[in-house]
Image (cartoon, rainbow, N blue to C red; front, side, top):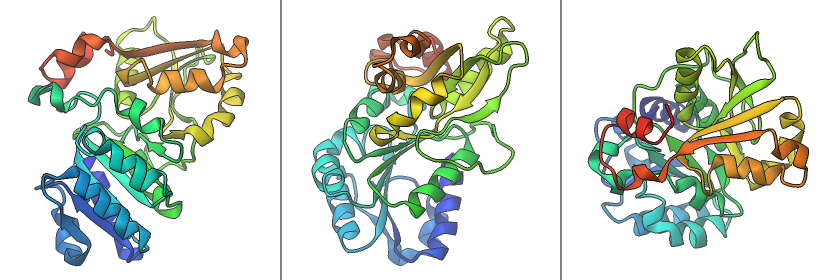
Length: 294
């Protein structure tokens, strides 16, 4: 996903001279294509995420669309006040990019776990969540965000995520993208967001008794809740899956979207990470298994 992000950012920056990148002293071996092509539109803010976000907000107020880039919790929790006050409340075109969402950097310790980030970022009233499930969805989200500049949070996996779409799909906030369709049980859906799409495919292909269709929702937020009841009503059961804790996560968001209709609420079943992962160090695969995701 990281490589798809940078490649698409370069492509879009060639078309739009107001796109800029601000990094928190990392991304080496990944961001060089942008830095080499646009040296006057990249700034290394250093290990100072609050300053990085304030700088991005200032640039956005002067007409730039700024992408801030760092690992997991650093561009979110470490500078939450600046993201809220400077970016979200001023409705500025800043895209906060977090690489290694979920437990992708689990071996570096639980300071690098991003398992409460949806809860934080979706609580901001103007923030659009962009959580692509594969590299093609990364490109689709990037194109949407540049065409519709606004406060946004782009949550990426780390590397090696499988391609789930043959081409770049059309995306819109709240839209469910089909990945696999079950001939036997088309009314049962596994709905993912972010890199948990790969875990959804693994669950279904590994266990023939879990014969679900699979869909992904890469764009969502407060403004897209109204479109969820109509989509949910088409299914007998929808299980949401996410590499995030249940509290405040994607499943909770969908529950909130249909809370006024008990017949829809009863169709939902959340699959999320157990809090047991929060104090644990290990590989992403080990932690996802410990957390109940796979």
